[in-house]
Length: 298
Figure 1 (cartoon, helix red, strand yellow):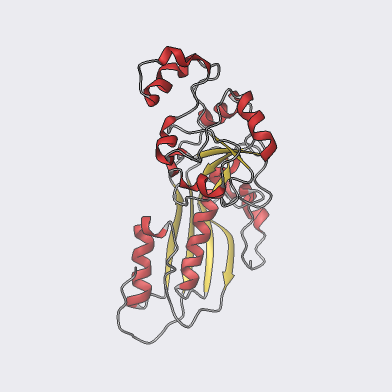
Figure 2 (spheres, helix red, strand yellow; figure 1 turned 135 degrees about the vertical axis):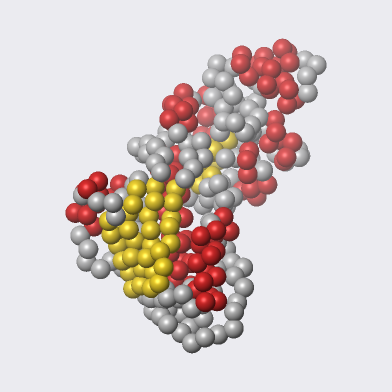
């Protein structure tokens, strides 16, 4: 478990983002005037960031509170480890942050909300999802990046099929912003257990004149299949293929993480959706084009 620091009410948005990613993996947002009260309720001492090294602060972990005398002679980091078991609720794995301090962080629509635990995207430093639907949001983020990649590569038509895990219906409010073809998605989703493959939606696009790979993709560098397909499309005039979007890691957001939230009296931000191995495939068609000099995908 990464150690965290509970922030002082005066912390700015810039100061918050200077804390290393792994020390602000989970945050709880409060209105500015409620943060000090929340820190007191969780026996967390606010720390002034204005004159202290941020990396050192992040390594301090949760405030040592009253029984600091038991840790005399230890370094600050060791002291927290030594006395944490004396604290009523144990070391808190969350950063408590004011609404103004998280102004530069990104949240889904209608968020952030008070007392909800948010989990940082594993590859986007400023992006946070409510723990209840962390896995849904993360998978949707990956899926939409795959579709965006295909569009910039020049796809004229894509068709998404469900193979395992969550269907579109089970993704709930996280609707997919695409043009569908009149397929009765709800009916097909209801029968997903009866078929090994099910069409979730399809969309048709006007391909761009120039094919490219966006520079700001976060999943693409980690997906060898995606990189191979991009190379085929750019350099070898591939016109049809199937790309896989798969959810293969829980990132530690599981039943134990859910129980921990309840222990500290915080909220999940909705009905908790546990991790599932999920696999969707995207069948893509590209218009034929004349032979051209090979490119090197970045």
